[in-house]
Image (cartoon, rainbow, N blue to C red; front, side, top):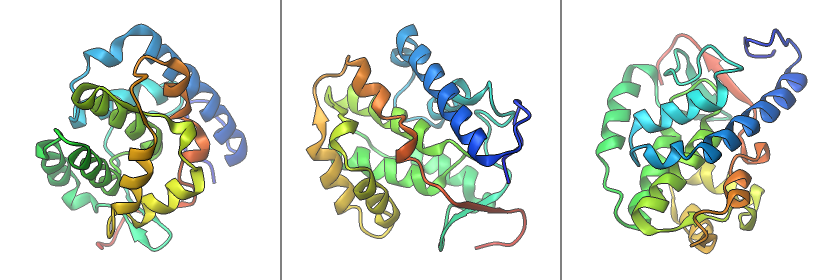
Length: 201
């Protein structure tokens, strides 16, 4: 079943294609406008603004915190009742070293604050932090997609894999548009979410 959207699309595959096309177009606009450099690295407000910018043409929930519990396979993301507190705690996490930044990224992935589009928004958010704090960004074309998804799935228990993958892909080409655009490639995105309104974890 397709998520409710502004485009009136009911076929999930068609929605996925259109979502990718429109979000990439908006991501390019976001980069070209210079707006990214004005956002505060590491805050939830910045992540929400990136999400709003990417998905506002598609979803009413763009930039808004989710109102359902989310799971991916057997893993359940932060429950609604703790989500607000979780986001506040993540915002306070340090971000001055590579390890600290990735640990913060992993925690934001566990929080998964939006109904959809978390991965693409969070990768831009991650690169904003890397760019400001380390003068580096992730060269996403150097990150194997399957390795990345598996490492992210395991990261709540063991973050050494995702740290290894991202460290090996760092580049100082912080103003390369093509490198930036690779980060929002839909194929890095999780599939197969399930949502449920009731029940705690």
